[in-house]
Length: 262
Length: 71
Image 1 (tube, chains in turn blue, red):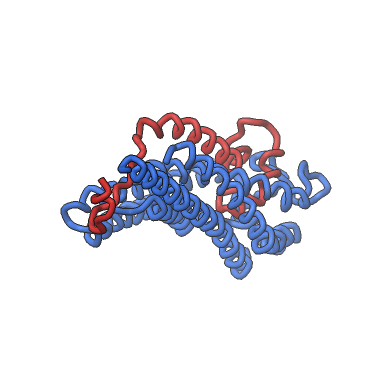
Image 2 (cartoon, rainbow over the protein chains, first blue to last red):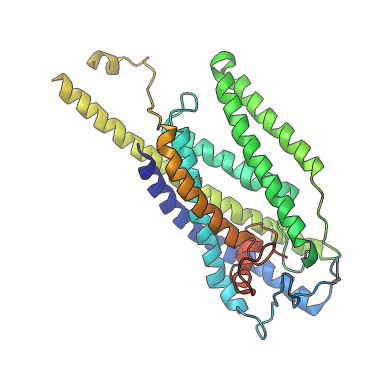
């Protein structure tokens, strides 16, 4: 099992996962993006601040007339580009972390450790940050605070991922002495304490204004389904491929051992 | 040798990959991945390496649906 073999599989799985993510985002998410943009353009709700999308700060307009990129391109090729890029990036990263985890997480087989890495990745990089800073539809969010909000979001992601890595290392260190149950409990507990404190310290963002609660919920649910699709596809795909790679390696080793013993 | 592999109780040795072997890949792929994530998540929103709004608009829907702060 080499880094290269794992990375190639991670990028391949990431590409497929990115495409699956695009399909889900397009089918599940886009209707609510369109609703939000329609609300924004109809001016039926007052934003938390009087930003318009024609401003130069985060300036873009959602109408086809003056836009650089048409709505049609945004929800098809643009969405596909974003999904594939994030899929490839996360697929590669998960593969490399999995390469480091193989043979280092207790008695787990390579397939099991890869699944564990993907699960921890989903929870720490996507799910927990979503609970603190959930996705917002167009028309929600003040353009003048985008810098601070982006900074807070990535700070929380960083804290969460680093805490997850340290929690895993803690569990790994304790495991020989205290056993699996107590070690996993200690690792997860340490992670929860760190992200709970960080979640309290970092500022709350509420720029929803009087945006309709139902559309907000539908959009956020669709966003979470989209993100979950990406991670599930990467986790399931890479676990399968790494498992197959390990079985092939084992079979080769057994054949060599048998040949040497003859 | 055949006796060892025949014993069911032996712990299966999973060979780990030396970290020194992973490091150069991690550096290279890590940089590319962060760059890709940056352009999808933050370029022409919170940061502006390139002028204009074309990148922002092109990845606009992905940025929203993948949960990044957009505007």
